[in-house]
Length: 558
Image (cartoon, rainbow, N blue to C red; front, side):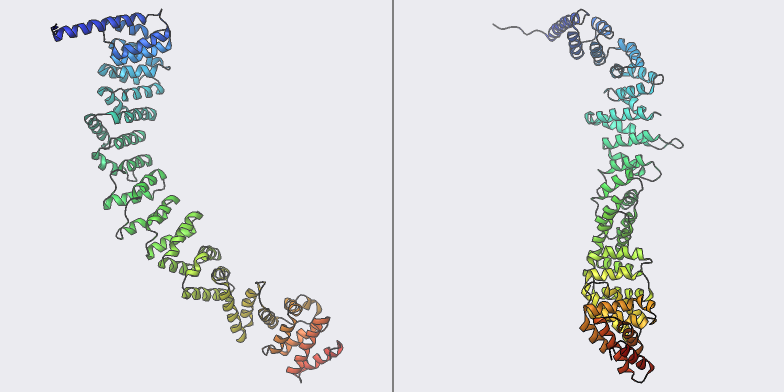
């Protein structure tokens, strides 16, 4: 049996009758005598499936004053979803009263189109700051064109809290906007960013607008964003603009690169950090290398480290000079990082060597020498020779800068330094420059393992410089005699042989030694006798020889 199809109007009418019947059943369950849980559920359902009508409007309006807070809250949500404009006065009053339901009331009012937006705008000028922020947030997240337009206008509010609330809500809505809505919002925001003479945007407003423009990703904003990277803008605005430009700055132009580098060198890390993030993937060309070098003098250590990573492997004098400046920085990791690059560069090693030779103070010389020490073995022989020559010059002049240079040479090759110092000391001693020779042998004698010949040279050069006062107290205080005593006890045969070979010592030197040690016991007395006999042997007819014989006889050594 075939059933005749019913006309469309009949079907729609039947559906409306069924829906009205369902709504009436639900409305009976919204009465105060029903359980609160049931009333809350009914309010939720009505907000989703209900249709505006006299009974529903009256029921939801009454539910706004329900004794149960949960029912009131769901009634607010339902009134907003159904856009029941008759509830607007109550919603406005609920917002003005504040409390936990004011936010839901504001969102419901914002969903009611032009009337709701107008009511909220009027209300914003008469409520406390906290409520104004809730209203701004509600308008931004309402999904209606009029309310969103009002929310964009709220970005210019004098209260940073209102601006922040509107910006956060608008930002949350952006992913769900249609392309047309995104373009409309972008147009509005870009209009706000256009500079008006004498009317600068408030700091919070400009920052919020820049961040929203960034979230929209509209390329038309590039010019306005690059403009806001300039130093004339506040750091938070510049930082937000740089973050927004990250997606478009993979291959910056010459002018854009200069802007980025200037931002990266800024003292405020809010500006420097996003600029660095963009520059991280930018290739450094030889032509633009000089523009990067100022980053090595940036206030922030992280910027300097990043700059070293970008340009520190270029073997150029200007790069070496910039790296060299890092060695005076208080941050140890930065110093080590710069030093590691310097020592790998030929120009870097040359710069280090030249700088340590020309350092103005002992402290500066020590700083450079300690930095170079672990790598100095890799330097050329010519460099080591130049460092030794400068160390000798300082040592001869009594300049304390000699110590760090000698430390540097010792760390590289201790044996080679020892041989050079001994050779230099012997050369000065042969020229009868005993005072200067003494300085070299003193250095050599600091080593506990210094050989007897070196210690003899030290004692003998000291003997040449001694006043040779025969007074007992003076002799007891003479370090030269203590040095000879130590040699006698530790290296008797060697010091005895060396004394006999020392043609450069005078009879006065032998007599002073002999006079002192002849009065001692055992090994020292024997040594003293040898010294006095050398006086007689070297100058037999002198008065000293006569005094030496007398002393030998008196001490029983003749």
